[in-house]
Length: 130
Image (cartoon, rainbow, N blue to C red; front, side, top):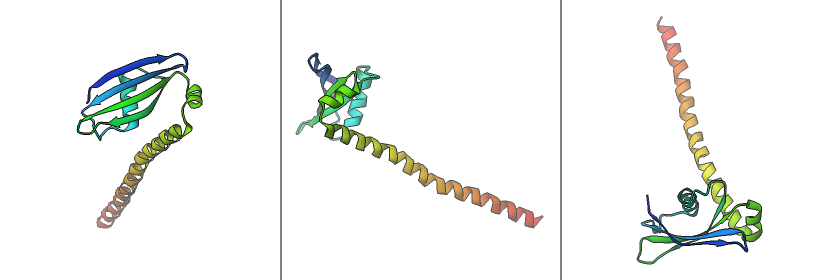
């Protein structure tokens, strides 16, 4: 696991949000925005709040990533303040992640069906040998 170093932690009362900027050491080129948001949620104990990854910047020749995150108490307020394109991208990524395990489960289903089909055939051969 990487180390999260907080660069800035600003409470923006005008926009009713918390703005976090953090460095993720050792994750240059490997960190995805939703994974970073999950890491921030766990690190700062932000369960039940809306964490929006605004920017992930990789540094040339270095192995760390700098991320900027907005933390809102209310999702409706977040949707008013933040560009809707960002929310559509986040939803698109979440649906792809949700479909991936479903595809893996559908691939397992034919193998299970084959195993079930093999069992009755074995039972038939046992009946014939009796």
